[in-house]
Image (tube, rainbow, N blue to C red; front, side, top):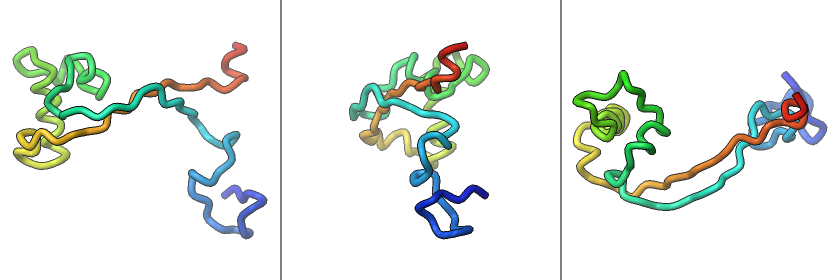
Length: 99
């Protein structure tokens, strides 16, 4: 286990308090908005992880509905809650940019 200078010896350090150089991935938030769940677009369904293999009847929104209900419970799609849509991009470390 790594110990940072500002922590007690052998103390656990949650990731939010680790130095940036120790992170495996750095993300930059590029857009944040609020929308209704059922307003999701076909492209957004694929961005959420839906694949061609998941799509019944050729509709990615239906596949996303099935995924949503598998996580949040039966009929949770029908509630149509407001959800946060957060878009981001990966920031490459300097050593990866040079390659």
